[in-house]
Image 1 (cartoon, rainbow, N blue to C red):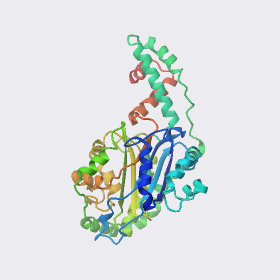
Image 2 (cartoon, one colour):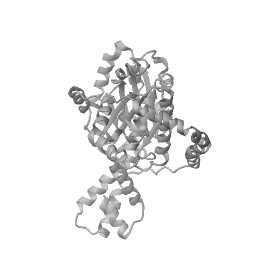
Image 3 (cartoon, rainbow, N blue to C red):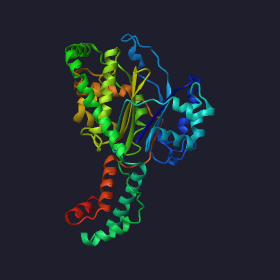
Length: 418
């Protein structure tokens, strides 16, 4: 699956017009019309998720009096997309299907070049520091086909509630045969070798750096603890008005979007530590959590961390099932240490001990901190509405059972899952 992140500074005087254009692309607050004339997301084959949003950081005033970082940063228009294939193929598909819309949107940005939209957008692509995908090998087409297969099998089962397993099985086979299913892609040797090479990066780096890290460990531990004891916590009480605005763009589907932005704590130590941690998270997401769960949390479709402004800030985006409150509670209760590793280098984060203790466990401060950094997503698209991560995984299992020659207990389990 490819991940595309494009961001460009907005001309200040053009922002009201841009906001109006973005609003016209939706059917409900934040919810994209798949066939809107500006960006017809539904026409783009292989696109799974997409969002358009204005990266306007409400937490920038936190820097005042604490850091010597600039008080302002550019306000950008960001286009973020997840889908089949590479980043390049995603960009090609977007330009091919929505060039006039891309021109209309990014014309509100500085130094826009309408004569070479593709090249201009390519130059403004940002590399993502860490990326998690729930089912990295499942294509958008496969998800749709397997959902259609499940619907066909479920209809056949409901139409014959009194039949035995042996009587029902051929009817299910007949119903499923009416659903076209493209062959599943196979992992190529080149992909296996590339994945193995990437997997070896962490152990090799650890082996090479171990002697140096052992020598530096006492100094690094002292530097970390000194900062953890003195770094300020900035977790203001949420305003009702802002909570209403953010709540208005949520819970229109079983899946929600989340966007947040914030400053990395000042200093080279925190900058390098953040880079290293996100690199490790990216490695772990690819090799340890590639089968539908991020640690013990299985409600996230995709998540990404991207540096902005020469690593002064980080933007985080996710697509998750359920409510915002349940999403936060799931992480706090199951993998608070992971939240601390991911975000504790952010300016104002609740106090941690040794990077992983405390932090998110200070629940009220943590939730207020998250809310303080959340920003609205103006346009959000999901290619397979009403499908949760559980539904997608179940449909894949049903498809495997449909294509296998099941008998006995295995056949009964398969029918029960339908």
